[in-house]
Image (cartoon, rainbow, N blue to C red; front, side, top):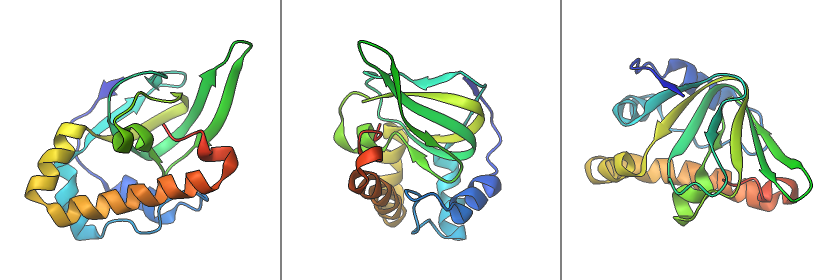
Length: 159
């Protein structure tokens, strides 16, 4: 996983506002809110087949998908089972972010991908310094979690 220092969120904002996936958020931050959020996000570039996180991992990072495609899967006793394919404009890692529990699945890049990471520590800082923005982000992420929970196929894909 390579990390860049560029803080230009324009492509992420475009992906988030134009996504038509059934579980994509519809209440995305405003342009001014994205500008305030930028310093709290770290860009992450994944090569095809690179693992973002593995089932059982204990981190609480939340990821916003700018580009690419991510496979959400787990390994059962017989085979690898794909739970979902997540694309631009979506959120990944919302389950552990809210639940403080281990990751329920492995997320791997199906194609070269660019994401933006918000760590639990940076979210805590955001909450203290920009509470209205933190609330907007939680509501957006909660909307994704609720949409996935309502869809029996994607329910288990909350990571």
